[in-house]
Length: 321
Image (tube, rainbow, N blue to C red; front, side):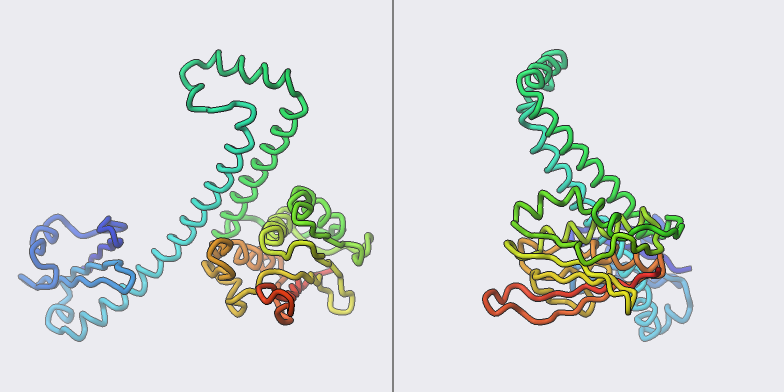
């Protein structure tokens, strides 16, 4: 039998099925063998440690064989851990970002929330008075919080797509109407950066086969990236090519340094330290399209002369009529 334990760089145990008996036997030296049991411990370059304990005779007798066994388990289990660590970190980052937005938006209505925790009645009366004083402000706050709820809902749907736990039902939908509906919550963000988003070159009668919820999720991530990375004071063009059955999106946005694998799990565009994402959004976009028998590719048409930080990026979404 072979048992393993994985520890992170802080010496915290991530996973272990090492028995108490083996833990006691090898507590002084994890790189040793005794009574037909062999123990081996190493750390990788990221300071993640793997401890292997085995009673296999070949592993016990041969250093070469146990090193091969160790390397196999190391790649397998540390690879699995890295995959789920990326998902966990991205979830934490996304939830923290949404929570920060909600806290900022609710503050004008509730004030310092910590100071109001002691007396619920006083807190509710204070909020009631502020609503009566400025009903328009209260309405805007409620609408903003509703947007955040939609963001959380989208994030939860992303997790279902990542884990292949969503059913796919393809039906015919008008492309332009779908895009305008999904774009609506992001409109203010583009306006703040003085970016015009143009859908005029898509026929209003054109329909494509999609699962509406999954397509909404895909475009939610796309528009979210567009707000963050598009060049201010510019235009984004949506065009449908009838010849190739594809949606073409042209924009001037931050140069993607990892264009070849930008749609892989955990790969960020690596644009800048402050704006680099967590490598989940683009992966969800491609995976969501793939499960609808669609696809996406990107072409970098070169950096802008006046601002080399930005490129002429063209996204091509292959569709089905």
